[in-house]
Image (cartoon, rainbow, N blue to C red):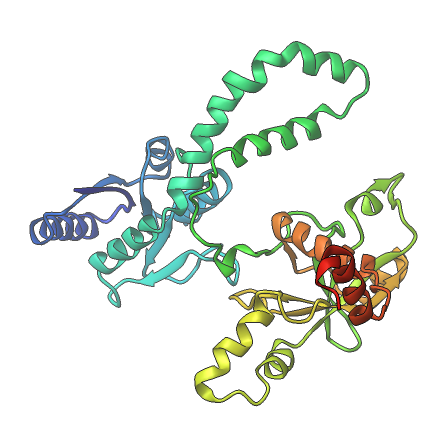
Length: 360
């Protein structure tokens, strides 16, 4: 049986009764699910109850004479990692445009619809992984007590020697999270490829930039060591970019004149990066159009020129894929053409040496 626990922040007794009646009916109609709802009718009580684990929070903007529902939303989005739904008779919320939090107007949707929506979100596993009591949180707790804190003397000594221990500990902690992954992981989803928006405004290897003049996209392929910041500036005086070609054009070229039944077979080598060695496929997903990195279209800018010619990075390719791109980019420019010989003649000579008794 799947169990779901929700918090309803609502001071209207009529709405509370309607929600609880809905939950009772849902449990009767769907015995495989067990849904429970706790109620907070004030801002202070809501904050107190938020210390408990929930699968979602339903918030009414109007609590009493104040917009304290907005205060609850602000607290949740700044402090907790939990799905939120807003159900209100007024559209007056603090939510920014594009917020993933859904706003429902009373009278236009039922509590059952909202609860079912929150259950679907819960089933994705997002909050099981990264929620307040999720896998990452549990792992970090274990890493702290078993791996990091026992070495506190080491970290203190390094700090006394002027080492940036905070960055080292961050990197070391992330390495422990990687230990959660094993060889039996599912295939990559295209939604994993890009980090959007980037967590930092710094130009990093794998950043995808849009040119202000031609509106084309480019990817930063300077090695990470070149992009390190020293005294407020990049270590390098030139940042290397490669243009990303339109996926439609390159894909059509790969398919060529293949008939309908053979188009997929013709396209697969291109997106598997087994067709042309100077192309690297970037998949299309919900945040980026995708395309093919063209290793032959390399251009360099100074850091100042880059900031003038390009918009700030909107997204970045994640590290594991960046490493593969850099490997193929390096291999492309490190390739050496094989010297031409008269191979037929040389093959005859080798055969004569290996099989002298069979020669006429």
